[in-house]
Each structure stands twice: as C-alpha cells, then as structure tokens.
Length: 159
Image 1 (cartoon, one colour):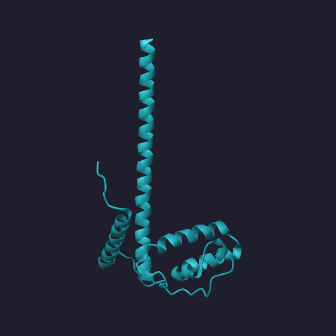
Image 2 (tube, rainbow, N blue to C red):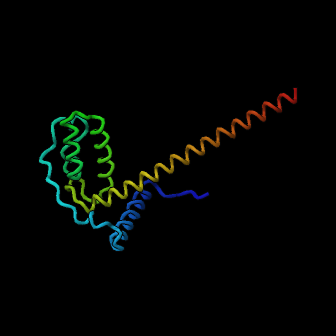
Image 3 (cartoon, helix red, strand yellow):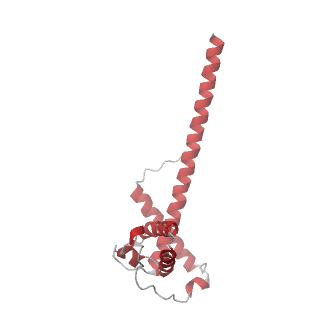
C-alpha cells in the first residue's frame, strides 16, 4: 500500500503541473480539436448584474471568470435562479483558486483553461480519496461485525 508524504500544497502544485503538462502535450500533438482553437469571440458582458452580490459574487470574482460564465450568471440573475447561480459561483471560485496569475488579474483564456484542467484533476483526486475512505469504512464496519459475531458465538459456546 502506497502512502503519500506530500502536503496538500505540494499535491495541489503537483496536480497543477500535471494538468499543464497534459495541456501542452495535447496542444503539441495536435489533439486539441480545431473548433476549440478558432472559436468566435463572444460579446462581453458589461457589468455584474444586480442580485449576484447577494448570492456570493463580488467585482473581483466577476473580473476573473470567463465570458460564458458571465452570460450564464446574468441569465440566472435575470430569471431569479438562485441555486444554479450559487453552484456556478462556487465552481468559478474553485477554478479561480487554480489560476496561475495575480489575484486581481483579469480573465485570460490560457491560464483559465489550465486551471480548469487542474481543477478537474483535483476533483477526480478528491472523489477517489472519498471512495477509498468509504471503502475503508465499510471494510472496518464489516470487520467489527464479524468480530462481534465471533465474540457472541464464543460467549454462547462457553456458557
């Protein structure tokens, strides 16, 4: 059984480096579909809509997220779909935490794409850890149940 001695920060940096390497390799090998390389530019969303601040968005976060997310959040605010807006804002906050740029840097496609890949790798890693934890807990519960049954049987035989 392999156990890591790396800290969370070291793991995070490792995930980020792996994601960067994967993105570079995909680009270099021509594995990125051309439709992703030549997308038409989307019309920018001017300013943060009313209501998003109450749902957890601020001007800094608004400046760091991609145009598509801004459009979605604008639509969610217009239509009053709070749960989708809050979920999207949480995801955007998580991805922004992986962007390799100054905290107040505006959104840029390259660093954002790398951050998304790193975030996805981190999500997969967290999911794998959760599954392993659940499996270990289930195994421990089964072992405790077997031991309790064996103790009860031994007590019954001794009586």
